[in-house]
Image (tube, rainbow, N blue to C red; front, top):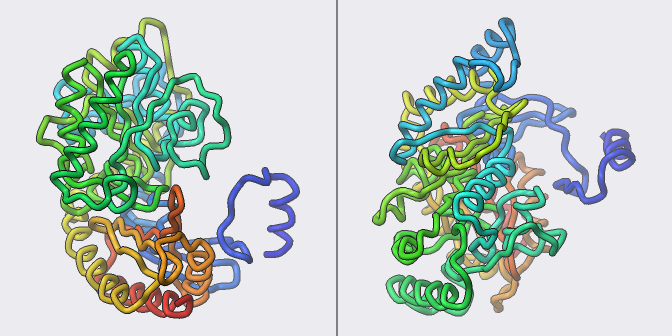
Length: 427
């Protein structure tokens, strides 16, 4: 393992982050578990950064990929592609967007990049509204709208970005307000911001901020924003890369918690739909999707093997009601962790929905972030056989918990017990 780490450092970028003091090589997985090169077994509560959505080595997906690979793996979008059309039909139907068109990409970053291209072209402006504490990917344009300093390596951008309040409920200037007043204050701030600039192309927002530590506004904030945006024809882009496909339990899409003013104009997705295969995409109303006036293709977006995986994975998700399982098991897990948090001075908040749970850590007796303890908990959980993630934005540190949506009640209890012990070791 040390040899592989040394080789990694020799040929890969210094800024390519690795978890753990002794980085982990995962060799195989099954269900909700993975194994490392030493044969150690781990309960996976992070799923390759929310990507292994249903289960590791899901037989239905493995079979679909194997059978497709035996026929043809790739041909590009220059040729008709039956699996791509079939998955696009299903995604368009599930999206809630009228007369939807779907474009497949290879990642969430590329999906958001495409959404920005569509919005700025359609609206003929390069000004974009984004949320503070947000993360939308690592491309040049996506970094330019990322409101999280730790993941924004350059101030250069092809876009003019204006940042809006509201993505973090329990911090910031409106944290002490009740939900109704919080929404009203954020809407007033948005109106004031729009009064000082020419109309932007779009607002892009994660319904639950992923890298930012699984933070979210009160339900209905983006619906209230949309009423204001529609007055000037400004588009709403929902970044569903982490929240889509039922992970929040209560909704199939995260935007549905804010759907009182109708669906978004554009939705981006990735991660879970491929269950580890490289699938991303954009859903948009036809007039927006079709606004480009030059040719375009995708060499690897929508390739047959990834579409076969997506179709099999989506079918399994729907047929086994994994959204309902996320709601039921996730609800139990959140309550279990909240009981633990009530006894520990370093746990500021347990938040989230379904199987998308954040545990924010602070230095006891203060409201200051405690990244050192977050790393300690991460290491302790690993030693006890549990893999979790971490995140956070401006002066925050949070543990991120996002297991495959097929998680059982027994596995949720096992993971909660390990995490409790890890938290107690830090506090």
